[in-house]
Every structure is written in structure tokens, then in C-alpha cells.
Image (tube, rainbow, N blue to C red; front, side, top):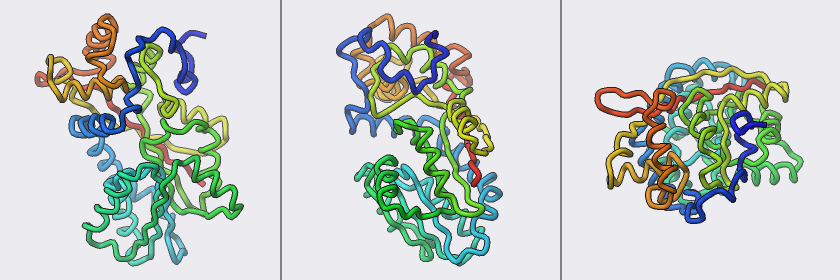
Length: 310
């Protein structure tokens, strides 16, 4: 089977022997990963795209999740620092004024949980929401709940940009789908199959360092899995871009960190073989990856919002 036709999640350990030994996964350096991710958010319309979806589409999605319920139970998988979670909670509050909300967060990073707690402490209008945080991965949460044999049902579960870090995605989807209460929904956000990420991973994934913690996955792969599992869903695609202009300015600090994020490689600029860097530099400026507008190079960061029904 040719490389281009393999599902991304099967490529984790492919062609590692062909890789320059000095290249290592960005995930191996936590502080650099966090900083490069921050640069990505600052350079992209990622959060604006999510907020647009939450403002215009979420009210319709959650319209019945709390019907005839004395408490609305929300489960956030990979809630990060909580900014998007609070946006979601504000929409649920608007839909069900005064109804108590229980919001539980599964997040493996203590640093992110601390930031989430800070955001909650500084935010107003959260009086009817009870928060609980679990410092664990989605797999650890799943194993813990399965051992208890008491499956708590949830009215809304969201998994935002986190399925890349799950080893067994089909079993994870099946498990969380089994936790849905009456009228409940799951919201999954991942990169779209039409995004530049899809092309980048297909074309160069085998020549970049991979980490067992992270895998290549797009909405195309997820919807295929859900079709096989017989799970009902709707998929909405929204445009998003990342300004990668700084990547083409030698020595630009922002560009250096964006290179790391794009390739998921720590210090890509100084450790990548020159031929690989030259190839990707040229490719990123091609129409299949980016558009050029007002003197900027805007990478296609399109997102897919998958709504799963109970």
C-alpha cells in the first residue's frame, strides 16, 4: 500500500530509520511545545473559528440536552486551560438559565489545570456551576470508570483538538458514546481532511520524527471510524488559517517556533536535513497548503466540528 493511502494513525513508527538521528519530536520538550503552541494560537484564527462555531451553531446543538433535567452534566476531555470550556458553559447557561451545571474536566497536564482554575476564579456568573478536575488522560479516565462499573451518564461531552493523543481511537469513541444520556451530544473538533495539515502529514510525515504520544488524524479518518462503528454524526467544516510568513524570514524567532509546531519537531530549523527543509519550505508556499494574501502566507488550518448523537 502506498504511503499516501495509509490511514495517518497507522504511521506512527513508519520509516524512523530514515530519519536524521538529531531530529526529535517536539512533544519530548514540554516547555518548547507549550511555547510553540502559544505562537500557533497567536498566528492562527483557530480560537476565533471555534468561537464562531460556538456562537452560531452550538445553541441549536444543545437545544434539548437539558430537557426535564434537574442538573446538566458536562464532561470536558482535554479541557486545557479552560478558555473554550467557559465559552461552551456560557452557551449552556443561556439555554438553561438557573439550572445547576456539573462540569468535570479530564486533563493530563497539571500546568493546564492550574491555569483553568485561575480562569474560573477570575470569571463572573459561574455560581450555578460545580467544577471538578481529574489529572489524567482520556484512556486513564476510561479505565478508571470501567473498573468502577458504574457508568455516569453525561448530557454533553466535548473533545477539542485532543484525539491526536489517543492510541485506540475507535474504542475511545465507542466508550464515550456509551456515556451519553437522553438527548445528549458529543462535540469533537479536529483538523479537517481539507486542511494543509492533511497534505503535510501525507507528504512528509514519514520523514519527520514521531512520538508514540501523538498520531496523525483528521476528520476524514474519524468519520470513517464512526461509519464503521454505526455512530450517527453530523460534520461541519469551518475555514481557519495560520499566518506562516515569519517561517520564511531567516532567524525570526516566531518563525522558528512555528516551524517546530508545523513539523512537530524540536528545533526543526537547526536539526532538519537541508534538503527536507528546502522541500517543505517550497511546498508550504504552494496553493495546496497555503494562500498568499496582502503579502502574507496563510496556511490552511481548516477545522471540522463533528456532532455525535446519542
